[in-house]
Length: 72
Image 1 (cartoon, helix red, strand yellow):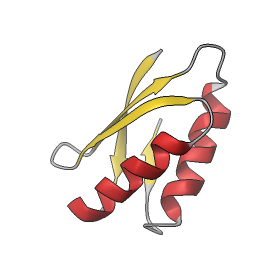
Image 2: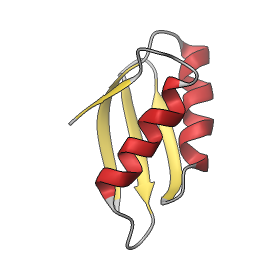
Image 3: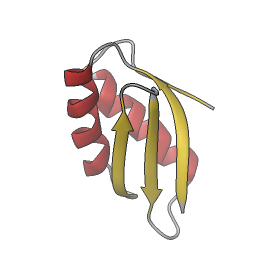
């Protein structure tokens, strides 16, 4: 399942690092962040619990950028 989320990230470099970390989260098939539009596209694996995956993505990205957030 492919979903697009509005995010908040402060710089392009942090966006790239967050993209890498999000892609490593269990349940995420792929992750892409467009810094200019402040949007993250996640390809969730079949059967993945969206809420658990998003919580894990936020936790992983906040290690890089404290203010990272996904708007639901």
